[in-house]
Image (cartoon, rainbow over all chains, first blue to last red):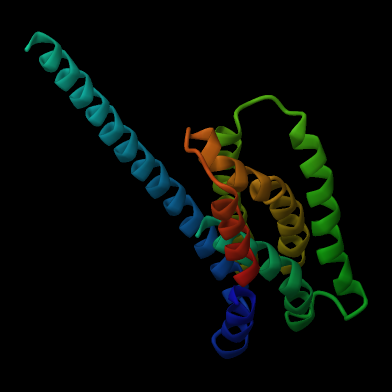
Length: 64
Length: 132
């Protein structure tokens, strides 16, 4: 799909759109990797908070 | 999405570089076949070579994506300086290196960062590449 799109860009806009598109795709990959790492960090923090909450609850129940 | 863009990048370069060379008149139809051949051969060589290089997959992925961005920018600069033929040769080498192990590293990425992935999710990653 992307290959076909770039072919159209090269035909309609400019032949150099090949290298522009390649650079844009690479930048998109770089940004997606950063976004993925951010999501994973948030998910891990939420899991850690949940674990702490469960531990606290268990301790409180033991005390009661 | 990373796989979608990666395979877009790989197939676009491998598929269009020969047309680019013909249309910019740096090579005729027979000579233009050298660029995709060089790209695919170097990609295979680097894929084998980088497998033995120490370092985490996570770090290798970052370096290769950054090398991809660098390759695109260097190629564009060379084209605007009028060295289109050099840009074609050099881009085949640079993209051959920088795309070599991205496919397996993207598949490895979730488990590298500590996520448990199921078969269905892995097949979704592959499907994203197929759509691209």
